[in-house]
Image (cartoon, rainbow, N blue to C red; front, side):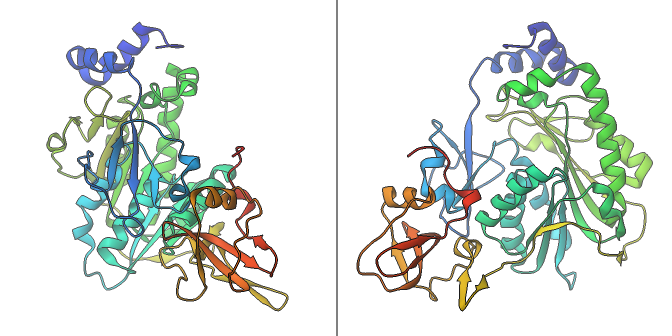
Length: 406
C-alpha cells in the first residue's frame, strides 16, 4: 500500500486477527474499496438486489457514480455510507425491543456524529419502530464538521433529530437522560487505509496510544448522561486492540458496565473478538470497523436534568420565517419527510433544470402561478422558488448548492 510499509500493515493485521486471517486481509488492501448507499425508507422504495446483510436498505453499487450530479441525492433519498459502518445501526436495531412501552419517547445520543451516516440510519430505524416517539441528539464538537452534519440531517428530513456542537463533557449535566449512546469515537483510522490516503499518512504507534486515551476521556465525560440499564454502542474504524476490546474492558471496569452477550459470528464476515465484532476488508465488502455493545450497570435509572448547556444548531422543523409581509417557506421543510406538497403548488423539473436549481442558477418555466412553488424531481421535493411573474427567485440555500461547474 502506497505510503505504508507492507511489513507495518501486516503487523497491524496480525495483531488484530492473527497470521492466518491477516494474509487474506492483506491481499484485500490492494483492491479498490466498494461503494454503497443506504436508502431513505421514508422517501424512496428500495430496489431489488439488496446485498448488505445487516441493513435491508443498504446496497453495494457496481461502480461509483457522480453523486453530486444526481438530484435524488440532494433530495435526501439516499445517503452514501460504507457498508461496514452500517453495522452500528444494526446493533442498535438488535436491542430496540428493550425500549418498547416506556411511556415516554426513547432518547438516543449519537455522540461523535459527523458527517451523519450513523445519525441518518438511526433516525430511520427509530421512526420505523417508535413513530414520533423518539428523540435523537446528533453531536459533533468540531464546528466545521457540525455544520456538515446539520445539513445532512436537514436533507435526510426527520424533524426528531436535534443537532448539537458540544464537548462530550457538556452532556454530563443531563444525568441519566439517554437510553442509548452511540459513540463512534475518533481513532487511529486503520480501517480507512484502503479508502483514505490521509489515514495512512497520519498513522503511527504514538497515534494509537493518543487515540486510546482520548477515547477513554470521551466515554468518561459522557457516561453520566446514560441511564442505568441503558446501552452504549461503542465503535471505531481501527483494528487496534488498545482502542477496541481493551477500551471496552476499561469502560466496564472503571465506569460500570457489562458487554452484552451477542454472537457476532452470526453476522456474515464479521470476526468475533473478546468483546465485540471486527469487520475487515477481505472478509466483508466494506472497510474496517469495530463494534461492541455494553449495558450500564452503575448510577441510577432516574433522570435529572442540569441547566441548559448544549449549543444547538438544529432542533425540530422550522417551516418558514417572516420576511416583510411574506412567510418564506423553509428549504428544510421542502426536503423533510413531511413535505408541504398539499400547501404549495408543485412543479416537476427535468434533470438538467433540477441540477441548475441545485446549482442556484436562474430557472423559469412559463404558465406557473405566482408566489412560492415547490420544485421536484421525479416527484421528490428539492426546494422552493418564488415566481414573481417574469422570473423565479431561486431559494435553494447557498451552503447546499452544487459547487462544481455543470
